[in-house]
Image (cartoon, rainbow, N blue to C red; front, side, top):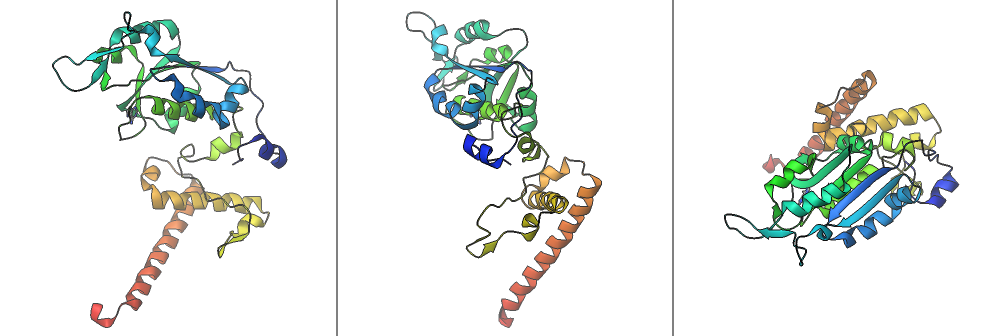
Length: 283
Ligand code: ADE
């Protein structure tokens, strides 16, 4: 994986793909807090993707489509209850203004489909994305009929859709061809269906911990195999659920069997050393 920053890329000679001939992806965000987006989208990879012309992100203040003199966008919930609800008319007017044939309209919502890497790859291929960020206690139910997909970034509740929108935008922008070293996105966690293998940089020894010798030996095939095996080991330890939904290659099946045998031997050794430490009365 290449490191961020022009100087690092330049000095390491990492290949950043030339931008292919596709129109830049366009993203329109509808929010009551446009100021929230400035920092996260201006810096690092999202900023660079935009300055390279691979993506255009426009952030609109939803209140400009608000109703009446006060530009009202919310109201009390019918039937009573705490909190204000986003009205449908300002949202419909905003969508009329920004949506076009081929647009994908997203509503961040904790009850939506869980946003994952596969959905991010899918969205990165779309020409135009609109993200409607709800605030207040929620949205008038009829707004859901105006959107194409509701997406959740996890089982917790944020104060609004802005941070989920930024999470989605960041994830999508870094997948665009030319955004970063293509090898990085191909190999990273979730794209391969495995967690990422451990990585090391200088120094060769830190706090008594050394770098695996295979990584400094110059044998590319051995490095590739070690990385695959360690990715399998890490996935097995931390996210075994990922292995269940995935058809392994022949090589992966063999390496996984080795990992399982090594893990079993390690566990047995750990247990026998705990047993040896116990006093006879504890047994
Ligand atoms: N709005 C509030 N919480 C959210 C979540 N977890 N995902 C998407 N949108 C949200």
